[in-house]
Image (tube, rainbow, N blue to C red):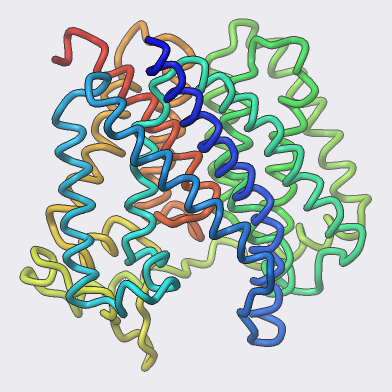
Length: 398
């Protein structure tokens, strides 16, 4: 028993340190994006060690947890994960740039993100999960500090490209962290301010980057919160008052007002249908079964693209049918079954709702979000793993 407790503590320390280093690197990732978009430079200085150490700590946490949690999850979840990792590893070994290419290994099409998916086996420990939830409160405040600092020092920018260059990484992380914090703190009166702040900073950052899909996600979150509110009249009145205040600040703050004008100019322009049609016209059934590999590209308006704004199709295309099916099963099927189950406890409802949104985001509802070694993907994997653990515990699913 003592040995098990010690291993649990070790995993918790490694896991939290890995997350903390990843959280710090969020700032440098944003600075790297700015450097890339403004000068074309993507080189990293000593700050790259934050990313490297973060991934190393996460890898070790995953490897220990896979062995430690073998009796905590249904065997089919381990089989699904190992099939994903195995197929993608083989895919990378045959088509990737090599095991000595760190950039390739950590790419979405590399092995790194899929080892990190093993974080689904970390969240079974109740104490560790409670620490994780508290850590997310800190994460919201830290990323918010990054955002506020950038607003004060740099402003928003005159057009969307400038806004994305300075805030895209922050917005992408907040769109996956803020909703969970906002919803999970619903009945915590002591932390009500953080709850409201989390949703406001998330919406504000989405507005700054003019990302309609992020604003749509926050709208879904507010609707979910309203549905799960007992005193709907008071909620509606409070929501209207907060909305009026937010609109007043929006219209009377030059930077935010500029973002609103630019967002209105974007309107309802469909920027993806042509892309999707062009992609679908270039694939065949064989590609979808075996995968086209690491270096695969497709043509759009005379340019070669390795990525697509639909992560399910993209995964199916480059990795093949088996990894795509297994990831869909773990990420979409199981969480959705828990989401629609009647009489579900609120925490599980929130967790499954986050995974439903992630599933929709991967289907093209949102952009800039994919399977990666980025901080937000770690968060999604842990929440997903908690759901798989709860599913495994219930006798009706065995």
